[in-house]
Length: 253
View (spheres, rainbow, N blue to C red):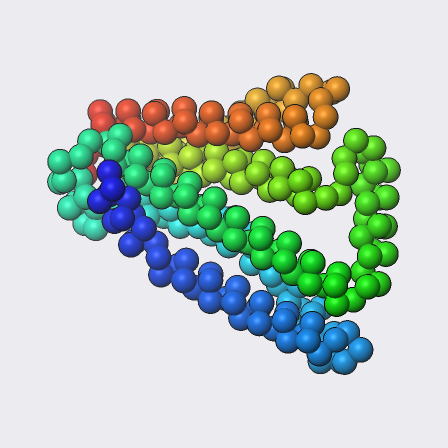
């Protein structure tokens, strides 16, 4: 399993380096803007541009890592690239398990890095520009007006990030299953792509329905986020076993 995991990381490290490079460039622009100050036109422009850019990089970077994992799986099952992988003395559960594990670790590590970077940048802004405290207080009051039980703090953001990350992991696991069904059961069939896409949409909607079903009306924010994350992780486990079973019995590479 260790060798399979290293192999999966090697296949995706270039794309991760690209995301890291873009993030570093945006962060450098942000730090230069903070150093110059918002009274300086260049500094204000750099802050105004780099902050939303960093937010978008964080969101789309994590999404990209998950999508890339699905693309690699599809390529392994449908091109000559995957022949050597399936010729190794490993069963489908091990091969797919390495892909799930690599994707999960990559998502967690990248999300943690972006979260910590975001917290550091927000702290830097608050320490550099005291007037931002007013915006923070305004945001807290707006959030309290929407939900009096939710406090705007690091824990709230962490729980929200955890829930979103687990849900995205569940979505990627559904995409794994849909792609495996397409390659193993529907390969060469008419409307293969459309059927696989509808299958993906249906299973994704089912996960969302289960998450909402288990979130009772009286549940507080912390419990709701943990339930949503727990459902997504359990759903991912079910998708893994179904995917590995289909690969093991029906996939011909």
